[in-house]
Length: 502
Figure 1: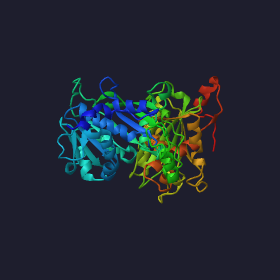
Figure 2: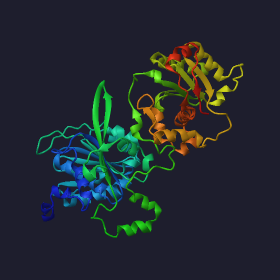
Figure 3: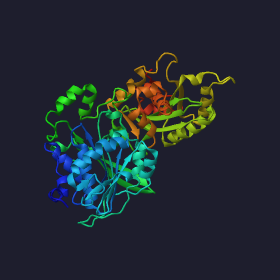
Figure 4: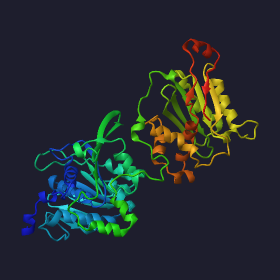
């Protein structure tokens, strides 16, 4: 080992940049290691360019390779070219003389083997490099067990590939000093230029709570994740770190001039916040508007409002909303989505949902459907006649049932604000809640739908969008209440008085 290698130790790899970023940087690197919290399987460092994100990721990768002999680490980016030209160079800078770019340099602690796309270490550890634009590379990535996964610029990686890689985090290696089993982790970086339309924002930031204290409360956060694995309820966590432009004082002091000269596009990379995308239909959506209650104590306070979008070749979607008449809140409690069936089949299946609500105590049902189903089918009955006949025959006469056109056909454009204004109002006033599991497609629409999806008629998403907007456009905001002593009389007459808003 030469003199420069003797003077440069593994601890030097962990030296943070100067400035306010140092505390967050160090915690990101060390989270999951002995003597630090070990419960966050996923960790993301996101924010402005120049905040030291990639350097922190490289430091963690090197540290794990040195601390856990024999560990296999996957270093991933969208393309192999971007990985070798940018991320790998940052890793070499972080490692200093510890890692040689010459495979013949056997004195170094680690050395690059170009033909194998990996870095080997004397202790048996290895860092494998992958670009996800190559299918064979992806196959090798998901076909190996890892002790750590590091992804640079996660926002440019497909979420399904990322989730598949997570399932391969199961290698068993032990810390060289403490003997502790390695804690399986995937650490990633991301730019925020894609805003809240990015799946990364929804995965890590939406619904998160402060993990840090004091002035770190907003920038260091965690999200609890509860899943059922093989019949067992399992709780895990994701951690999130936010880096801001100007917090890294180790940058070239003239870097601001470079960004100013680069223009508006480059300025987006200096943003520190996940801004709402103008392309999003519902930037007002907040992840805290989920609920998971399977049963309410008293269903008599609800009216069941159903939005229905007809589809023959396309998807046919029913959305079931429980409207709290007293608190004027909407609970999107379920959905039924299918395609390729005839009108009677759809109606019979939807009927099972309706009857389930009746058994729970619902006493008035109002269905608002695509006006096109009132067109004749050519055999003397419209789709609306067929469906309405199925429902009226089976639903008890003591339950009020109405089947209505959601709006007058030909009067509204697809992008008319009236289609979304009520939903946006409910979101802003926190009067709409979506069941996380029973109405997951509705929640996905609120999170990801763009106006481009709407105008291109994206399958399932736009069908579900139509269904939920039909429901929301026709909510009975104002109700004429009935005295308790008159309730029994009204029930016998099958009559309840509503002031419906059209």
